[in-house]
Length: 199
Image (tube, rainbow, N blue to C red):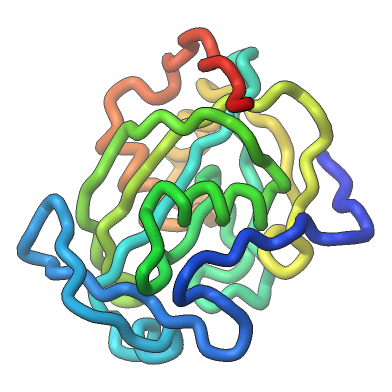
């Protein structure tokens, strides 16, 4: 398990994302590629389950393992459940890849890594409705810095073992990430060489 440091990673706040009134970009759910139609406060997006966009990054360590974490009990969606995607909503005026990098830095302290897009699809259930942009990235083994408000605990899990655990519907795992992994063919066998780190 990775210990949290005594400080959170520095924030890379994008347009429309900030303390005291985060606005979320709204998307047209009839368009698979995504088209922004406006924005709304995050509280309203959650309350009315409005269609928006979100990001998720699967972090690999180059040894066949994936970083898995347990969400804090204070999360507004699926508190306390396990997840293997670091991510969140796309802010109003924010580029999707920038949002993915921001969330990866905020939640795990990971910066300056190449992101490979692997999946884009709509997901909807009774608590969330969003166009998911899923990426994968590789980490070099340095300790991660977990965000206290988002991540209760985290560890590296062999991908095949994670696949087996996901087959158990009683394991408390966030349903959207479970569905997105199910739509990603052979994600557990992805062992390609990590891209070169960004300068």
